[in-house]
Image 1 (cartoon, one colour):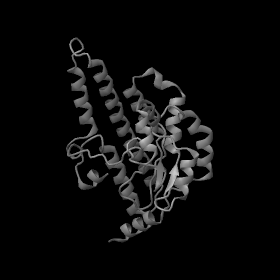
Image 2 (spheres, rainbow, N blue to C red):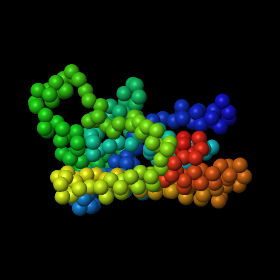
Image 3 (tube, one colour):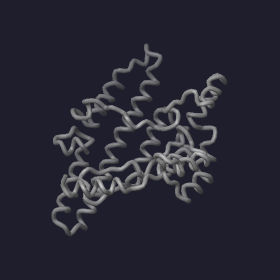
Image 4 (tube, helix red, strand yellow):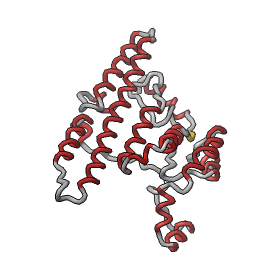
Length: 258
C-alpha cells in the first residue's frame, strides 16, 4: 500500500458519518418554486436531479486521484425527503444508535424542523404507499413482522452493466433520440408517456455531463493555484478526465474508475 492510499484510507476510517441536509434542502427549494407543476412526473424528477447537480458543493480531497462525493465532504450522508422524510424522532435515533450512527448537527435539527419536514408532510412516496395499502398490511409493518428497504431510502446498489465501459452519455443521448423518433403517436396509446420518460432520461444525461464539467473546472482552478508541480499535473489530468467522461466512453483504467 503506497503512502497516498495509506493517507486516504486513514482519512476515510477516521471520518465520522453525519447527516447532511444539502440534498434535502436543494430538492425542497426546487419543488417549493413550483416549477415541477409545469412538467410530467418523469421530467419534473429529471429537472430536480438537474437542479441538485447544478447546485451541490463540489468536493475535492487532498491527494485524491478519483474525485466526487455524494455530499459536501467524506461521509456526509444525504437524505431523500421526497421518498421518506425523517421525523425529529428519526434524527434522534440516527444520532444516538449504537451501530452505524449518523451524527446530527444542531443546524440539521433546526432546518429539518423549520424547512424540510413541514414542506414534505403528506407528499412523500412512503406516505402515498401507506395510504393505498390495506390496514392489515400497515398493522403488520408497524408490528415489525417485516420491513421494506425501498420505501425508506434511496437504493445505492445499482448495477449499470457493461454499458458504462463501452458507452458515454453522449452515446446514450443518441439512443434516446432514436427511440423518440421511432415513437408511433398514431397507434401507440403510451407514446406520449414514453416520450416524457425519454425526455427525462435525456435531461438526466445532460445533468451528469454538466456535473462532471463542474469537477473539471474545479480541478483546473485548483491546479492554477497549486505550487507543487506533481500535484499540479495530477489536477490537470483530473480536469482532462472529467471533461472526457462520462460524456464519452472511458479510454483508460483511470477514466473507467472515475
